[in-house]
Length: 105
Image (cartoon, rainbow, N blue to C red; front, side, top):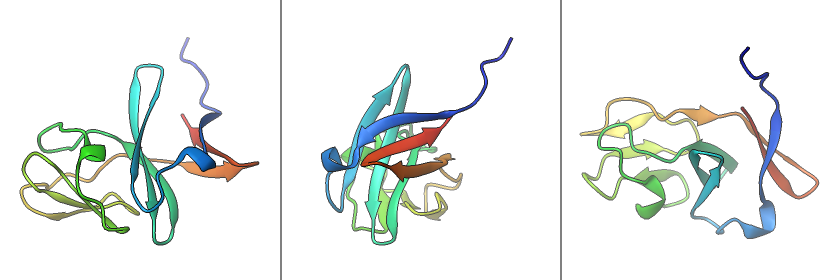
């Protein structure tokens, strides 16, 4: 029987790198927590083009650049905005509750 999806604690807000990408593991999943200009967002951490960890890339508060081939993604929406990236990042529903970032998985 499949496990029911639910909100799960991911990381305390106080531990997030300000205006940067923070790598976080939960079970076998790797996430990138982005402190964007418009709030905190969460995506799967791997680039959809070359599978590099996006947390190792350059982040300007809005866009995350893949460290492998310099593909660019909007960290707020996951949209691929520069080649060679073409496939959108898988964004994870997230929220802040009592100083904790939670994800719906």
